[in-house]
Image 1 (cartoon, helix red, strand yellow):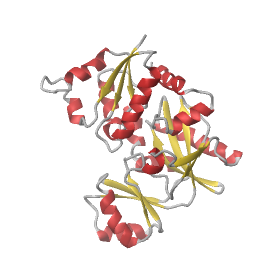
Image 2 (cartoon, rainbow, N blue to C red):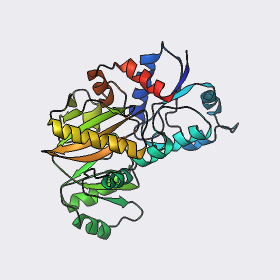
Image 3 (tube, rainbow, N blue to C red):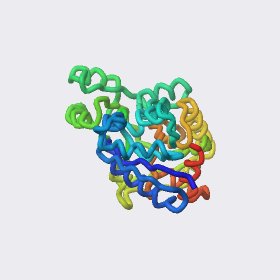
Length: 315
C-alpha cells in the first residue's frame, strides 16, 4: 500500500474549494492508501520555502513529504497552481500529481494561454490586459476604444470566477476595474459574447465527454459553481457532432502544446457554429459539484477510480 500525501488549502482566494477537493479525495481513497493529510490553509509560500529552517513551524509537517510515494496536489489557484509548489517538488525530487511547473505557470496566465492558442489557430475572444501599477483612466479609455461593450473583466491569473464582472459601459468599467484589482494586479478585459459555456476534461491525454453548463443566473460565476442547484449540466453537451470534434481537437492540441499532464480541464464558449477558448485549468476542482468528476462518471469512471487513475499517472 502506497504512502500518499494529500496537500490542500493554501492561501489563495480558492482555498475553500481546495479544502473541499482535498477532503473529497481523502474520503474516496482512505482505505486504499496510507493517507497523510496536509492542510496548509492560510500558509504562505514563504513558509513553504523555509521548511528546512528549524524556526519554521511547518517543518515537521512538510518533512513528511520526503517520505511518501506520491503527493496528490489538491490545491487551487495561487502558488498551488501557478507552478511554484510544483517547482519546489521538482527541486526536491518529490513525485506529485498534475502538470509540471512550466505548464502550470503558462496555463494559470490567461494572457499567455490565449497567445499560444492564437498561434495554433484556436479561436479566441478579443482581449487586453491591464496592470494595477500602470493603470490610469486615460490608458483604460484607449484600451476600451479597441474593444466593444459589454465587457467581461477577470483576474488574469485567477480561477473559480472569483473577481469576475460583467461591464455595460465606461462609467461602470471605471468602478469595477478598481474592485477587480483587489483580486489580482493583472486584469483581463474581454469582449462579452452571449454564448454557451462548455468544458472538456482531459485525462492522460484523452478527452472525456463535453459538459454543457447552464447557470441559473446570468453568468457562470462563483455562486453558480458552488451553490447547490446553482447550475445544471448536460453531458454530453448538446452541440453538433462536427463542432464537438473541432472543439475536442483544439482542446487536445492546446493541452499538448502547453505541456499539461495527468489531467486538466479546458473551457470554451460556443455561439451558433463558432467556439472560443476561455481558459485552461491544470488543477480543476474535484469536489462533488465539480465538472471533471461529472464527465468521468458519465464515461463510466467512478470518483474513486478517477482519483486512483490520476495517482497512477504520477507513479
